[in-house]
Each structure stands twice: as structure tokens, then as C-alpha cells.
Amino acid sequence: MNVPKFLLGDNTDCPNDIFVIHTEFPRFVINLVDDEIVWFENFQEADKEELTSEVATLIALASDFYDREMKRYETQ
Image (cartoon, rainbow, N blue to C red; front, side, top):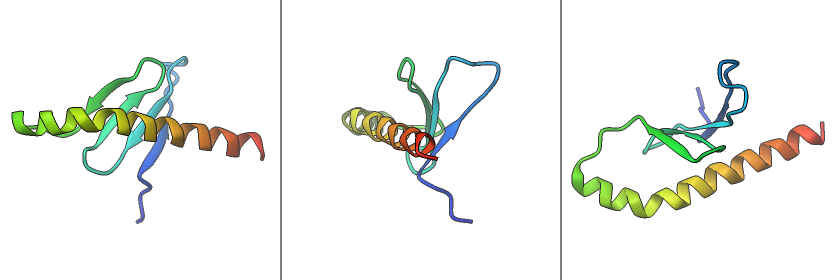
């Protein structure tokens, strides 16, 4: 199975939240409403420093994915 890099997540228990799941390393779920991130990886202290510099890029990519998907839904 070919799993996309980003997936949209939805849950009726969280009706106001917008979840994007990043399926590649580093795997995470981000709530675009408040930019809260849950990581599925265990990082070493050295990894955290490198990850800090990538977080802004990952958030931007997740936001861009969501915007693209919403535009596609609107045109259908």
C-alpha cells in the first residue's frame, strides 16, 4: 500500500479541531487550530535540537497540505 505523506484526521469528539497526520519520519499529528503536535517518535536530546529547526517547516507543509485539500473539496 502506498500511504501518502499527509492525511487528514477527523473525530466527532473534537468537532472544532483540524488534524493532519504526517506519516513519514518524524511521524506526528498536528492540530492546525492551535499548532499542538503529538510525536510518534522517541527522540534523543541531540535529535531534539535538529528537530527544532525543522518544526516550522513541518507545520508549514501540513498547513499547505490542508489548504490544498480544502480547495480540492470546494471544486468538487
